[in-house]
Amino acid sequence: MYKSLLISVFLSVTLSGCSASGPMYTEYKRLNLDTGVLYLYRESSLVNMAVGPKVYIDGGGGQILKNGGYLAYELSPGKHTIIVGDDSFGFDNKVMEVDLKQGENLYIKWKIGSLTTMEIMVVGDAAAGYGERDYHLIAMPGSVAAQEISALKLSK
Image 1: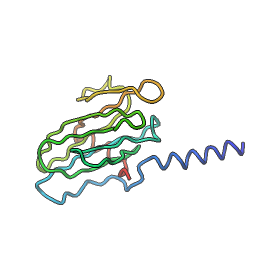
Image 2: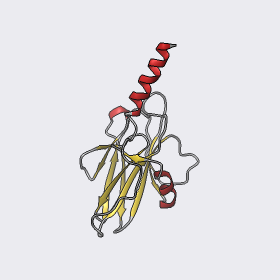
Image 3: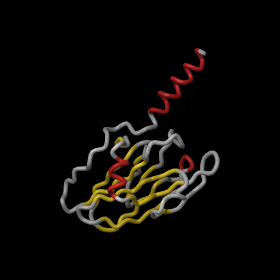
């Protein structure tokens, strides 16, 4: 029994370090009125909770999108390329092109699992890890995304 308790405590401490640990979501305050904000988020899930894909915007340095986390990017208006995943931890690259408007908040959700019940734009899928799993980038309507992202923390 003592051994099970130690294992449980060890796993809890280890896995808690894999979840987003920044402050709770607040709307990004733009520094420039001519820009827009791109939010990329991932709801909390037990599937692949201990690992996170890297996110690259327009070829810039990668940030990790942790379980239950979000990232915010202030970008100039126009076309931008989002790449999520770099083949580490079995996350195939998912690429999405977006056209950001001035003053716009654009929400992209990274989802693990089937989309059979969702009627939204889907970009790619892949099998990775133990068994068959799908990974998707989804452009989300602001009203839905605002509700989902409000429960998340900054991915740090």
